[in-house]
Image 1 (cartoon, rainbow, N blue to C red):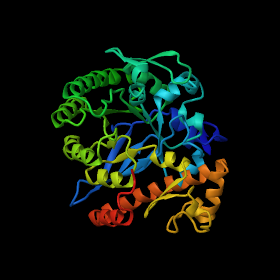
Image 2 (cartoon, one colour):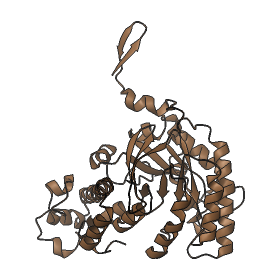
Image 3 (cartoon, rainbow, N blue to C red):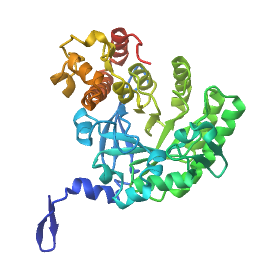
Image 4 (cartoon, one colour):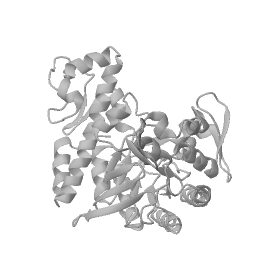
Amino acid sequence: MLFKSGIGFIVLEMPCSFYERVLKKKEVNGLAAVHLEILKEDSRTRARLGKLHTPHGVIETPVFMPVGTQGTVKTITPEEIKEIGAGIILSNTYHLFLRPGHELIREAGGLHRFMNWDGAILTDSGGFQVFSLGDLRKIKESGVEFRSHIDGSLQFLSPEIATQVQMALGSDIVMAFDECAPYPCTHEYAKDSLERTTRWLKRCKETLTTTDTQALFGIVQGGMYEDLRRQSASEIIELDLPGYAIGGLSVGEPKDLMYEVLDYTVPLLPREKPRYLMGVGSPDALIEGVMRGVDMFDCVLPTRIARNGTAMTRYGKVIVRNAGSAHDFGPIDPSCDCYTCRNYSRAYIRHLIKAEEILGLRLMTIHNLRYLQTLMREIREAIKEDRLPEYRQKCFSDYGYEFD
């Protein structure tokens, strides 16, 4: 790339589009570092078609974000993530805080440079992981004291620390440190939890000083209680953040209950801000979430079941590791255009999985992630062409709620 100096042009070997954007401070016409441009709203549902503008690219929405918990989407490279069609991934504060440590990643120039990814990154605050530790953690108003799952060492995360870690990581979207109430829980527990989440959110906002390159998203909590969801949404909207997430769902409740909560929660959020449903990634739930007005999703489901030998297809799950694939020399999904389906048969992939060859896990992961990227592209096309309800009906007819 050419850089113009006072004495002419200098050739730089490092591409500015990657390395300089990581550190460059950026404001566009007074807009937040991350903001949503709404292109179209569906006339029969609450679905929206849009573009999510970030310091590391523009993302078409609705979007599914592959999960790269520890700075990597398991088994595949950043270059393969791009080829699959993803422009934004999720990484996790809790895991990177414990290993290799945020100061090392800061020294490397941030997470983008550390992992050689020039797309956008959303970092989860680590709240869900900490609260999932059960007896290994102790909640205080100041934060959460917990034992590391790696070596048992005593650790502490607070709203301030979780935010400072994400500042060191340099993610585009910073998630607030929240308390995720379990399912089921009492009304009293959920109320205390959401009020603590609001207080912690205010501390996250006070801590984040890099708002020209990073955007803080607040998280609506409140369990399965409508009055508490309304209280939580009202409290965090007052802070006028760049985006809002819906947390505390997909934690063991029936899907019908999750959809019910979305029905009354999503309309509470500002129309012009991006809406993110955390931890949801099954095809039926993605479609239902989009129809209720959600713009962003993430989940470990596609990569996790891939490593267990299960493929996602438009006609339901295919358990490739089972004996039925042993003599099947066709692709996982004949309608899929992914690298795996273009080049390898079910029989070969089953052989790799049974032989515990890493290539088998890689090929399955590539396929599942491409399947979801294709699904989201088709959803966007259906919104654009005013046929989303019909698309939903066809998809559900084809695979029949087989995804968990």
